[in-house]
Image 1: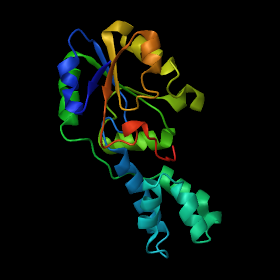
Image 2: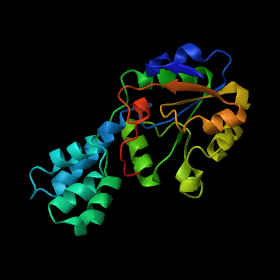
Image 3: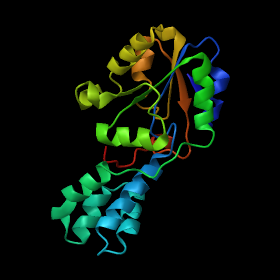
Length: 212
């Protein structure tokens, strides 16, 4: 496994590779920004609580289930489902890491380019649209039949390599979660690049609470 700490360094490790497959969250953009975006939308909907954004963000940073904690604190837990719908169907205010779009365009000139991502389809599609990535072939694992197809399930990797007509050994997967991103690729013989992302939610193997 190759380890990098800057996502743009991917290009230095693609000799002999025909298909380059990226994870999405915290690999091509900051998922913290997605969470913040969702909390801002919730704050707009629950404007009667002026401090709600700050409270949600503080609980998230403490690795607590933020919506549950804050809504219980304000005796509005009965409106949790409303908040979750707002969060999940937001039009996120997010952007790619600097230089990523240009890097993807350069890679796509000479190699097959794809994305494999976990998460609820409505949220992942909204992210792809907000990031301007709808032109890149993408497998959202939940759309294969449910959460059981999320990484480390091998099916998405098998399907993408088949779609590209590329051998596993000529493919590479780039992700940020050392605990799950590379289990399937290793089993199949796909090359790995671990993006040790200091900005990411999985940095130092610590997973924060997410509503995916």
